[in-house]
Structures are given as structure tokens and as C-alpha cells.
Amino acid sequence: MLMADGAVRVFEVPQALVWPNAWDQMVEGHCLVVEDLMKLFIYPLVVFLLVGIAPAAWAGAAEEIAEIARQRTQAFIQADLEAWMAAYADNAVITPSLAPFRMEGKEAIQAFYAGLFQAYPTRRIVTRQPSTRVYNGDTTAVTNAYAHLTLVDRNGQANALYLRFSTTWIKQGGRWLIVDVHASRLPASP
Picture 1: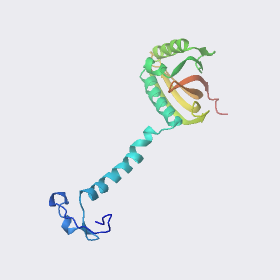
Picture 2: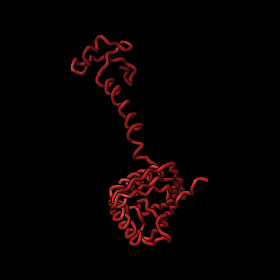
Picture 3: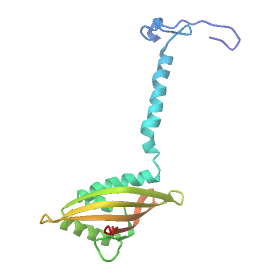
């Protein structure tokens, strides 16, 4: 080891700190010691954490909204009204394809979905081509998508709907909330 005064000091590494069989593995004339081994394991671990796990913590607005949408889809299929409604702002507005007029306010929206879940105990939805655009410094977003919705009533009658919808989100108090949804049926093919 080169000292501050320019002198060279030689230190012997205790056998307990030398990797087993390290005497057979010489790197530029030096044995691999615990510090070298730590570097061999720690650096790849740090890279793995940064590349493999940390991106979830660094998710952007679009990824956050996609995760909320995934959870909401499960809530819709399972008729979990509370989880389905959790993302709606108190003053949200929806214009659903199954009703002639828009509904304003969380209470009215909840009543609509409670009736839907009651009338159609089996629901399936497959979303296609979701696209989320984020605006205003990651505080506003619009999601557009298509969906194939199957509703099965209590008599076993299935209704298949092909929809397109737009959802407007705002970030308020650190949470993404839905302020507007417009859903309409796709026109029939010519």
C-alpha cells in the first residue's frame, strides 16, 4: 500500500478474510479479499434494484393511471362498488353508453353502478388500445380506449357492447381522481 509519505507498506491479509481458494485466484498478484467480493456482489445487486425494481417507484403519471385502471377493472368484474368508486372525484361527471343523460356527482354515479351491478351480476370487460396523455405538469391526464363489455343479466341473457371511452383524470392531494368519463357504443360496421 502506498502511504502519504511515499513509503510502501506491505500488509498481510488474514486468512479469515480471504475467499476460500483465493490463493489459486490471483488478480494482478493480489488475492481477492472480502472488499473485492463485496464489490462483486453489491454492484450487480444495486444495478438489479435500480433496473428491476425501482422503476415501479419512478412510475410516471401514465403508469400510475394504468395501475389504477387495472385495479378498477378487477373491481368492476367483482362488483366491488367501493373500490370501483374510489377513483371518482366528488364532483365527477359520467356520460355512460347505457343511459340517455349524463350523471353528475359521486352519489349519482354510485347509484347508477349499484343498479348496474344488481341487474347484471356477471360482467366481463376487455380493454383495447388504451392511450393516456398527460398534461399540465403531470396533474391532468386523458385516457382513451376501446372496450368489449359483456353484461349477463339474472336470466342468463348476455349483452355484448363494443365501446369507446374517454376518461379525464386530475391529480388532487397526491391522488389521481376521475373527473369525467364519456362512453359511447361503437357504430355498426357498414
